[in-house]
Amino acid sequence: MIKLVRVDHRLLHGQVAFSWTNGVGADCILVASDMVVNDEVWKTTLRLGKPNGVKLVMKNMEDSIKAINSGVTDKYKLIIVVQSIKEAKQQHR
Picture 1 (cartoon, rainbow, N blue to C red):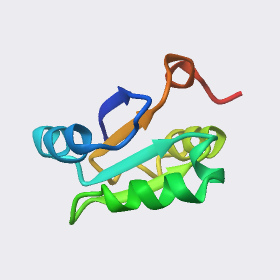
Picture 2: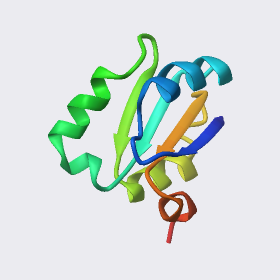
Picture 3: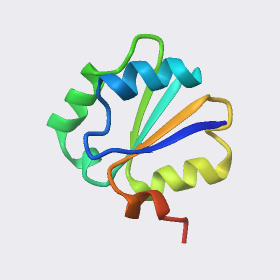
Picture 4: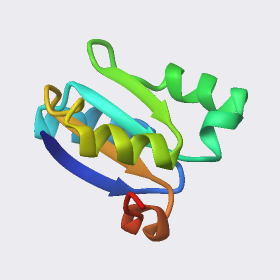
């Protein structure tokens, strides 16, 4: 179940990682970003900011959309984080 979709160019930081995760009771954060999946520094940084006990998944936009549409994410209380409104509006084609 999607609990929150957040648009934030910083992606995962204290407010998202702790306040929003606790506030909505999320147990998984999906970072949907074509840029992040190809950048090891970004991925390492995001892993360091992840709260304990919360799963962190980083996927490109196409794979993120496919995962959500397939129902595989339904078992999680999910926060989806994207960097732009354009990404948030993307749909599976």
